[in-house]
Length: 265
Image (cartoon, rainbow, N blue to C red; front, side, top):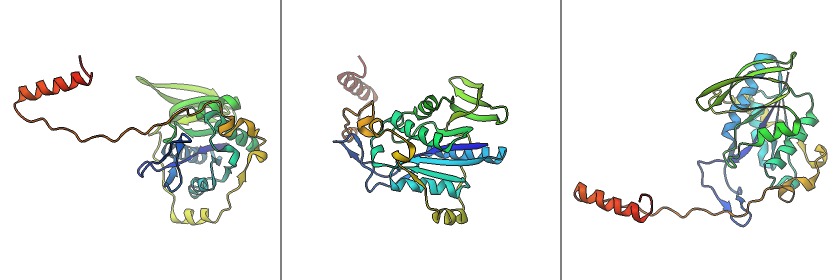
């Protein structure tokens, strides 16, 4: 079985987030970066699938040179092969353009049975890459997956549980499939020291638009069909007010303030 997993490097939300207001994007210079937390669940599920079904894993990421870090982490966790999709032409891609680049890489790799990805990224939070990837590739689309029940590569069949409002549903679909997993599907493992050292010595293969056969006019900021029209940072919160006095007086004062703010009528 051949497994692919899509990974993304995102800013560490524990650190200060900076914005480039003029470009309508995050200012990533000088910011600490990590593997997208939702993608860690996808990576772990890919590893479990490899262990349970005797498969091989290919991890891919799209991003600048620094994004190679997420691939080294994947290698340290026993991923077999990695590819970094990097080209100045990819900068500013919207979700569909990004999915198009990822799909081109998956087609180039070939013979993929299952593609794993996280439910969403913590920077964009769109949650649509998995669905767009499945649509472009023509693969079965399985979203909000909370459990893999069975994969039968020979019969080209996969059975999963999806988390839906009010419970779970069990779905059987044809392979190949794109499986978008949710938080809690597993417990992501950490790499050991030997794995980290070994991964640090690997030269990360890089594919640009030409290698992937991608039309540069359809990717990047210029080729994206959606645009960021405006971005604004909310003003800092002012200091709160502590009301003192008798309970009835506090209630009346609070009620008046809420009416003034149009919170209540």
